[in-house]
Image (cartoon, rainbow, N blue to C red; front, side, top):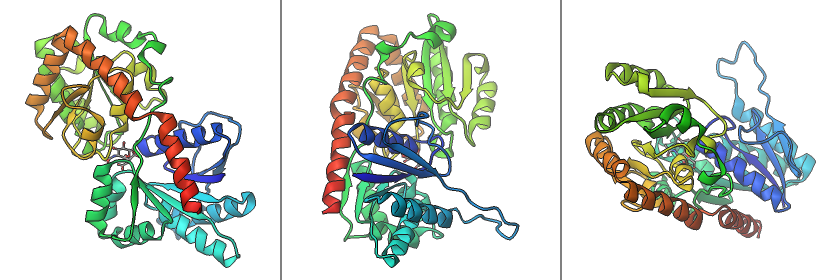
Length: 375
Ligand code: GMT
């Protein structure tokens, strides 16, 4: 098949999933064209059957808001025409599904066609997509897609609830991990040797948006630190980073808290972690939690959104109510303080991630979904 993929190319779970999917599809013999404003961060320089088409948006003094959606539609139209793509796969509805619809209308005007598949990832449905400024166009773009997938059962149900599009059949295809890459045994725990020593390493990876509740993480850490020697490693960057750094200073834990900023390769870092924290307000899936589990890192997270589909409470980690930092800290201390329990959870986490979220199986499901949508 000839497939076009559009996603947010910078840091974020939806871009990571879209890129990993494209790479896996190319490995299986498909031709994959990424159409984005920047090379996706997880895409290496060259891979056979993978092409990258940059979307360039002209700057003009009149445009206070440069119309990226239109430039994207034009590029999609051009790439489909030139390379005879059969499928345009939009990751994250806004504005990618809308641009794909415009491109398809233009193609039809040329006597050509393409199938649009939209994968819903999270805030395109639960937050941004429901804002009055986007609600109707999100619903419209979803309904005009030829195929719809969601990354969790939770997100599929939210889509029906929020948009009431009874005609949309949303197929759930969970996110996945590459078991060879997210493998604790594949890396030397350099970070633990340098920072942790004999101290437990608590870790968080995200884009530090308010939905991640990163200040809760610092509070949880401060409580755990009172009970045992430990360090906190925060990977990523975003609007709440400064507030989290301030919280660390206010709580007097700044010397044991390391803000590493944005990093491309998180698997080698996860191999040094003893516990992963994800106390988000909501999460349609929680790809970072899955990556941690695959590396044998138990996850303490909030019981919210699709997280319970990923983390098995009591087996591969622990789930607590959103904002309950005392409870999260208490269970973190229990897990880290009992070596046998930690070992059992770590082993179960790595095994469960491989069993339920296998890369090959999910990619095959996308392939089958494309084939069905193409009819
Ligand atoms: O929807 C977002 O907030 C952005 C998106 C991203 O690009 O990181 O995150 C969502 O998609 C990820 C990949 O499918 C999921 O793992 C995240 O849980 C989801 N984020 C939220 O639902 C907040």
